[in-house]
Amino acid sequence: MACTGNLIVLQVATPPAATRAETRLIIRQALRDALAPLLDCTAEKVPLFSQVGGMLALDIADCRIGLSVSHEAGMSLGAINLDGAVGIDLMQVDLKLAWQDVARDYLGAAGYRRIAANPDADQARAFAREWVALEACLKCHAVGLQEWSPKVLGRQSQARITVLDLPTRFVGALVTKMNILK
Image 1: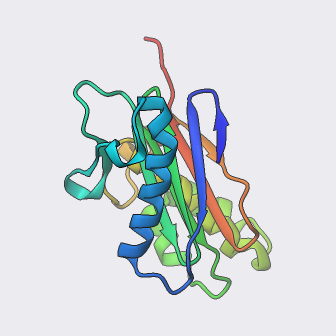
Image 2: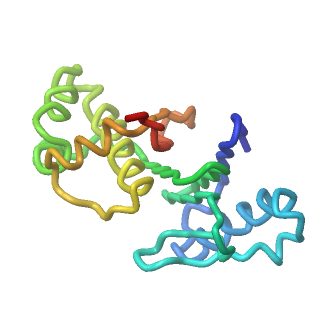
């Protein structure tokens, strides 16, 4: 568990062959354990629930605590933001991934160029970094996956993206909304 200010990031090892349902139970227990002292209750009493679209939340009126989770074989991540929305995403780097079409459709021309500017051996990792930043940003803004558009770029420009320090085969990102004064 890492805690910076009002952000808590949980990194939990999961069995590589675990089902998605099993990994959900594991990360939810870790979230309950982390939230219990903050909510002054036992872990069993932490009122987690899944919203439409699978977003995890606390069933507490007027609660500003944001939650997000992500899973890959062997690892799950959880994020708690005591000050509001948060998004987290995790990806296992696939060196054989044909990323070009996906990058064009979902990451836009600038994202594609950033990836392609890397040496061939580094492009899969560069794609994974761009992808997890996008996914975490969309989660933070409570928006489902969508192809690139100026609206997606606008959300990313209003986000604080933090690259997570994870084991070599994984890439992860944490996103919170920036407070923009008008």
